[in-house]
Amino acid sequence: MSLSAKCSVRNGGITDYEVGSVTAWKEVSARRVKRWAFSLQELLRDPAGKEQFYKFLDKEFSAENLKFYDAVQELKQIHATEVGEKVQDIWNEFLRTDANTPVNIDSKSYDLAKRNVEHPDRWAFDAAASHLYLLMKNDSYARYLRSELYKEYLNGTKKKSKLFIPKLPSLSIGS
Image (tube, rainbow, N blue to C red; front, side, top):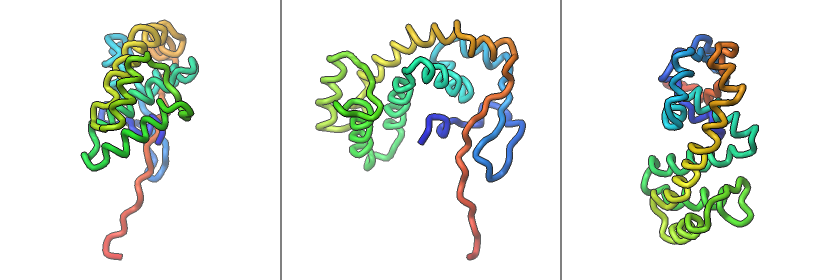
């Protein structure tokens, strides 16, 4: 599942939506864009802001940090019966030696995560996620606010953000 598939559309009006389509155009007001500069938390709370920050991180070859952080946050929301499997999936995707999307964390966080995988719970990767959040907050986020991508949105030269809206299966009632 892509990062943008998790974006919610409740925070703003979709101005052009096609039923059955996988994309929707979303207005991004200057007021909303200015709020992104309040804090990284505020940026990540806004689906369009999160999408733009992800694009920025992708260009900087560090999008895996946000992917990992999101996976850890999602881990806290799933049903208890799925936690063990999700912990193993996160480990395999991001932290295992031959991971597909490796993240670079400090050895203390890595060792703690490795021990926690043996006895999985919702908080198995909190230390690693906190480490990456601080890296994003103190480094990537500051660069993002100085980037052309952010400035274009702030100045209104880019008014629309293409968000991925997952296509829902059609329901047939009575068949």
